[in-house]
Length: 447
Ligand SMILES: [Zn+2]
Image (cartoon, rainbow, N blue to C red; front, side, top):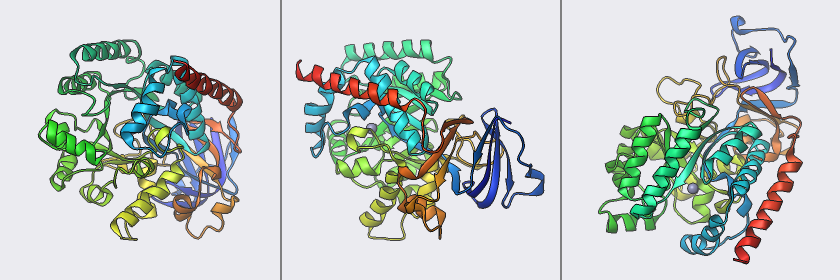
């Protein structure tokens, strides 16, 4: 056995809460759960294992899945706040992004992965620049990820040719070893309908289909996007995306805030996965995700922090609390988006379809439940942390009370990435990320 976690006080399988159980892991998968309510057939005594983790005083649950992020934006943490979206992009973000190097992407992504590990995230769906370096960073950090090069052509034909040939090269070089079932996979990521012309959007759909990869885009984020789409394209963003073939079972649409009622049905029938980004939506005053309408139609959902520059952290505990509170506040309904519904979205259970399999359809390497056969992607929380005391209701504590500081141990693909709050190699990541961030803003200032 590669790993055994024994005597876990509480274990949330994704469906059931078990007490005093143990879990065994081999070849990156959960092979047995003993104790609790499991049937005798599934019981297995604690045996010799290469690594043994003490679960006493801990709660175990599936790791969080970050459904939409721009990982290396960690280097821009606090670099521009309290501004309107366009001014913020034009005066702060775009000038710095133009100066980013592959080394910045590597260390920025390592910093993001370190923050994600420390706050219990075991998978991230990333869209940014220099994907080769981002892939390497996630692999070195040990968490699972999907990585896309953000494609933009600003409706310019020459720019489109550059983007598609760059992406074709990446698919050739990296695609074969990073297909959809790999722990770190590629995606095809046209940035949005307002930065990509219809030809680039259609090219992206075809490229994703051909390579069997997930398509990842931003969609219907702000009211301005809706107004501009109606003016320039003659329809709302979601309908336009549908008309060019962007919405499918292989697609992830981040934000999905502004939809007409008939577009909710369109989302449901297309099979697209939508991603709720509550902190980013609130910080940029974008609006409130229509959670209830999506949930009632069974639309697959994920939760996410978006990029650090519009958040400003990657802590999914913050996202869970904000997700639920924003729904309650916006709709004047305290019963909306319960703690259980919120946790389901955060751990990836709400993106599963049909048969309730424990692997996510979009990313088969990613586990979303604690059951035998599932990928071993889980976290242990410290029940002695004041935010976790007392345990009247574990899920309530996780969603409403806790922050990332309660995470004690993180296992991803069967590998222990953090134990007792320690992530080996953190110091180098912090030092290099600091160096890259200050050199980056220096370059921009003297340009
Ligand atoms: Zn984004």
